[in-house]
Image 1 (cartoon, rainbow over the protein chains, first blue to last red):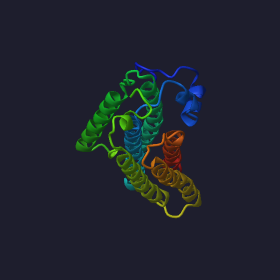
Image 2 (image 1 turned 90 degrees about the vertical axis):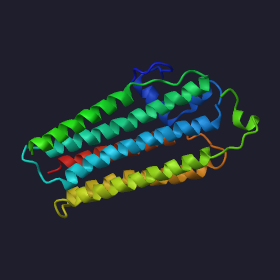
Image 3 (image 1 turned 45 degrees about the vertical axis):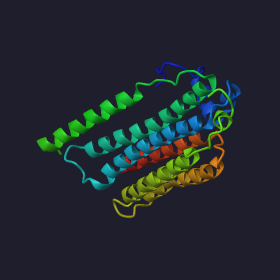
Length: 139
Length: 109
């Protein structure tokens, strides 16, 4: 999560987390960018939150609507993976939002991230795996 | 990007940016509502088990939080695009809350 190049929020994890909730430190650096850029950053953040909500909802739907699978705890495992992935996306979204905000204030390049590529690959592979399991009759 | 009011200085109108952001908050609240309905379904999956219902009810606080945040932010954006401040952090916390209690609901016997 911390591998993105460009601006990096330095300091121990608790300090970074405190900055998310109290962004006065972030607001002290650089200059306020055109608010349309800030609003675009906020919309990107919200799009990630909805992605996280979709995964959490998908995981809960797996647990709530599927009958228990023959393989012990397979249903619960699929549900938990999706729900935890959703939570991870939420935390990563606020981290990326804060780093983008800081980069815009300092006039630096926006932080790059491998997270979308990794997430896309993981979801694609997971989908293929489940499709294979359905076709093979694994329950 | 260099000035406080680069857009205004250039004489450009605020355009649709505040409106689009308000709509993004509404979409997010809608998504949260869908997830909360799925949470209710998971809560009553095995009938009316008090512990499951309690956890589902606690998870719904995440939904209430997201609705309240959306409402607050939609009002605070106004037409000037005030900075969101702590709102994104609390939004992510609500999502994590949903996920943690939903996960508990999944593993509860």
